[in-house]
Length: 190
Image 1 (cartoon, rainbow, N blue to C red):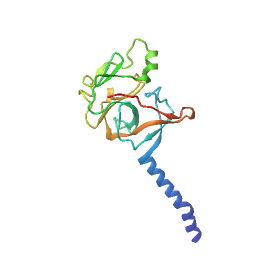
Image 2: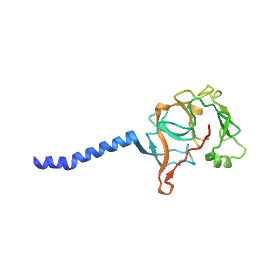
Image 3: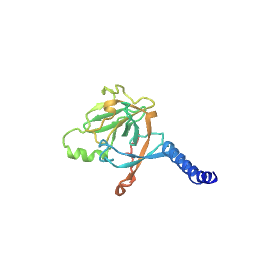
Image 4: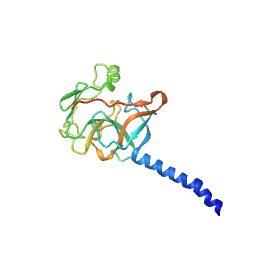
């Protein structure tokens, strides 16, 4: 019986403590997430791994967030925050305007170059979208879009997302090794 007790104290208890600590880190601090799909290309490619920061609960324009899919499929979506509460959002002739100010979207440069003379993002205002139908982003909500606009299922289609459904922000790519590094949000001076 003493050998069993020694085994439990020397192996099982430390293993349980390690598992509890890992669960706490993954649940409350952050976790690795594998990107599935191409809706955020070229910023994030299918199969890459990123670090999801659960601690960041303030969501700024230009940041990348992961949130529960609005269709309640159990999936998670990764998109870029375009509008925060109180913002107006408009697309006109391939140009994003937030609160009436032009916003540079360098992640769309390749897509625009590959599709000259076409709008990679259809013209809209929040008010004209069937999914939103309001002038400004409501309190507690975010307007999000993927970087690969032609294939992205985003707020243009499903409307605003609840801030409470956001799991956190993505600011580091952790795989593949040759692409490890910080993912910088787009600067929006508002």
